[in-house]
Amino acid sequence: MTDRRLWSYKEIAAHIRVQPDTVRSYRKHGLLPPPDHVEAGKPYWYADTVRAWVASRPSNRGRGTE
Image (cartoon, rainbow, N blue to C red):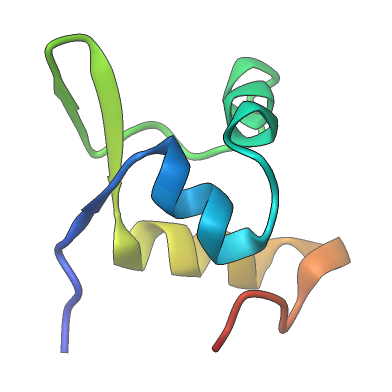
């Protein structure tokens, strides 16, 4: 099943247990995948995109998988 819900910085931060500013910093430094959608200048990612990104991060394998 595909999870097409769009997540903002806030939802991503809650998923990986960091502050939203940390997620913004990840994006600024190219550590976050490109947004799947941009609305009114605000980036959003599909939940599946975020989960795949989390799973591929070597330092966080298994983290954020409730």
